[in-house]
Length: 299
Length: 277
Image (cartoon, rainbow over all chains, first blue to last red; front, side, top):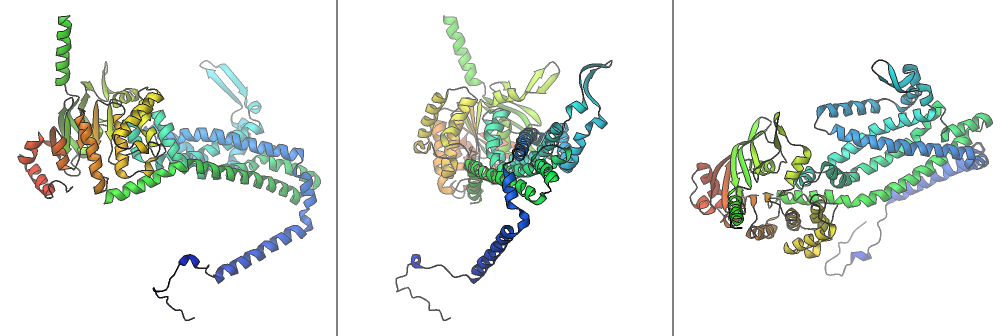
C-alpha cells in the first residue's frame, strides 16, 4: 500500500482517472440483489397468490366500476377540499380575529377527527337531525328535506372526505402563502394591485412551489383514504373486491387486484406531480433572489 | 377669453405652490416605541427631497407610511391636497375602503431596498404589468413603454430575462423602470442602494440622477451623502423619529445646526462621502 505522490513535473490529467472501488457499495448491491431475488421467488412460486385469479378479475367490470368510484371520490373531495382549503388558509391569515379564529377552530377540528369516524358520523346524521330545512319565524318551512333522503353513502363520503381534505389543504396552502416574501406583498400593493390580483398573480404562483409537493402526497393519501368508504357500503375499489371475495373466498388474489390498481394510479399521479413541479420551478427564482440579495446586504 | 387665460394661469400658479406631498404631525408606534414622533414635511412639485439619518431614525417608516404600506397612528398625510387613507363621513373620520386606498396608491411608486421584483415574471412583464392591470393601458402600449424605459436604464437586451439572472444593480434599475412606468405623481425610494455591492451602487445612483433631471417629484431615503448633496433640492435629517433639520443641501452639509446632525455628518463624511454609515 505504498503510495507515490505524483510530482508536478509529470503531465497529469484527472479526466483519465478511473472510478474508485468501494467494497461497501459492492456488498450493498449483492445484498439488495439477493433480497430482490428472494421476494420474486416467493411471489412467483407461492401458489396461494393465485395469479391466474388475479389476472381473471383485474379487468372485471365491477372492479373497474369500483376503481372509477374511487377516482371520482378522489377528484371530487380534492376539488372541494382545495377550494375550501384556500378560503380557510386565507381566513387563518386574516388580520380580523373573528375570521381568523373561526378558521383555526374549523381546521383544528376536522384535522383532529379521524376520517373514518367522520364518515360514520355523516352517514348517521339523520339520528341527530332528522330534517334539514330553512324555516321562517312562525315555523313556516321554506324548503326542507328528510335527512335520510339527502345523506346517501355517496353524499356522506363526499362530505366527510372533502372536510377532512380541506383541513389538510388549508395547512398546506397556508404554509405556501407564508413562504412568499413580505416584500412581494409590499411591491404589489405599492403598485396598486387589488387584493385579488396580488393573491392570484403574485402570491399564489410563488406559493405553488411550496404547495405542490405536499399536495401530491395529499392526493395520494386521499386516494387510499377512499377505501374507508367501504364501511358505509359505498362501492369503491376496495368494496368492489370485498364483494367478490365474500362470494368466492379468493381473499388474497382479490386484495392483490386492488393493490395493483392503487399502485397504478398512484404511480401515474406521481408522474403528473413531477411535471407540475417542473412547471412551477420558475418560482425557484424566489429562493435564489433571496440568497443573492441576502449575500449583498451583508457586504 | 382673457378671463379664461387668467384663470388658467392662476390655477397653474396654485398648482406649483401646492405641495404634492404634505405630512402633518405624523405619528407611528411599533410595540409602544414611537418610530415617528410628530413629523412634518412638505414636498412641492418637481422637488427632490433626500431623507438622511442614522439607522432606526424612522426614515424608512416615513416613506412606507406615505405609501400607506404601514397604518399610521396619528397625524395625516396628503397627496395633492387629498387626505390619504381616511375620509370624512357623516359619522366622522373613518378609514378609506381598500379600493379607495388602492386608487391613491396608484398615484405613487416605491423603489425598495430589496428590489422586490416579481421573480416568476420576466423583466418586461415586471415593468408592464402595473400599467396594464392597474392603469388600463393596452398590452401593446404598455410593452412599448416598458421597452423604452428599459432602454433608458440600459437594460434593453435583458427584457426577456428573469430577475434571478440579473445582478443586484440591474435588478434595482428594473425596479426603477417599473416604478416610473406608471407615471407616478411622486416617486419614493427606500434606501435603494443599501442592499447592493459597492461596485454596483454607482449605476443605480446614476439612474436616479437621470430621473431627477427629468423634473420628477421624489423622496429619497439614502445613506449616500455625496449623492444627496448633488441631486437633492432639500436635505432632511431625521433622528429618533423626529425631523430635525430640513434645508437646502449646501447649508445642510456646510452649516449643520443641530448637534445630532453635526455628530452624524463628520463621522460619515470621513471618506469624502463615499463611505456609508
